[in-house]
Amino acid sequence: ADCTLKKLDLPEMYVINMDTEPEKYEAFLKNIYTICGFEGMHLHRHSGVLLTQELRRSTWVHQYLPRVEPHSRKNPGSIGSALAHMYLWDIIGHSDFCATSGNEEKYVLVTEDDEMLKTNFAPHMQSLLAYLGGLPSEEKPDLVILNDLRPHGTQMALLEPEKIPVLRLIKMPSDKRGDDFYSPSGKPWNGWISAYLIRCRSSDILIQKGGPYANYDGTDPPFDHHIFQMMADSEYPTLKMDVVGITDSISQHIEGHDSRWKYDHEGVRTAGIPQKGRPRSRTNPP
Image (cartoon, rainbow, N blue to C red; front, side, top):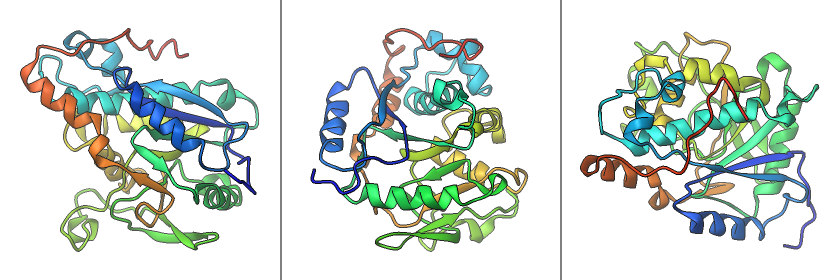
């Protein structure tokens, strides 16, 4: 691409991609090469989690999602998706980049392989990073969702050049959300956990709170709904989430490429899913 902005102040990026679907990673890379801002960025491929029955019963799973039913065969794709993100948060939090002094407030970019960043990504990301850099530590969001399905929140900034709003998720008690937590369509406010920024210092607290929250079993609701509900819960006033407030504005979500549904369907009729290797224990992070 003919770039005026070749390098973003965003040194690290992780792409979640299943070992069984290398063609999706290739398509993701092909798209990246057509857009600006990625010069000098360290790009890491993070393998998704294929959930076997053996792995489902392991202590490794239950340190992230303590309420996973060990003897069920249901929804291995949904549980694997949640584990892939939470395990990646662990990796990011213990990475050399985040462990470097002075980087605690820095952000790392995470995407799934079914999220296609758009040609206007770089200038808006530069604007987003400038907004984040101007916030005091206690006001910085732990997560910034880059593609919001049903945007909702208090406007915090406008991203240049297209003046795309950044919204701060509104806190409310989980038992009193009522109609305020639902869009006019009758569906809850929500975004995709498929393209986001995570703050280095936030990874541990998101794991500690996210796994046990609301007795989550990794299947109901889907992980993106679960995280939105937790981040909106007034019981956790220090947790903060911002969202880019126009759907598909800087990144295109391709819902049909979602592996989670495929593996959930297979889990109904198979005894398990073959897995290449096993993620390392959280007690011994990469």
